[in-house]
Length: 81
Image 1 (tube, one colour):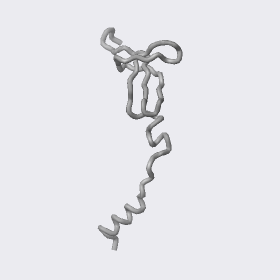
Image 2 (cartoon, helix red, strand yellow):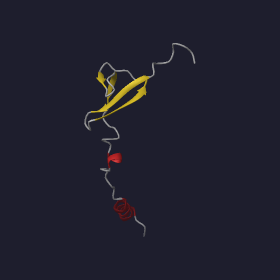
Image 3 (spheres, one colour):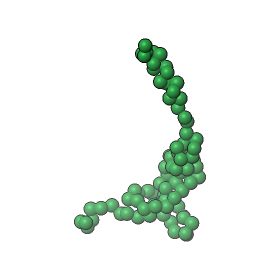
Image 4 (spheres, helix red, strand yellow):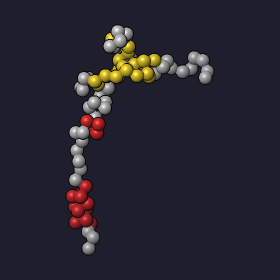
């Protein structure tokens, strides 16, 4: 790899404030805000809107669509005679 053209790859904390959930991983994203992690070190923190702790698919709060009703309604409108 060429020197000096790649962004820094460093530990970063991603935090979902709505779900009170955070995880430490490595990323090239930068942030001015910092947080002290459980290991006592300070890391940059990035606030995200949705994480696995708040996304309906992963939490089981997703909506089940009535696909049978939609198909019946389509057939009534545009008909299978």
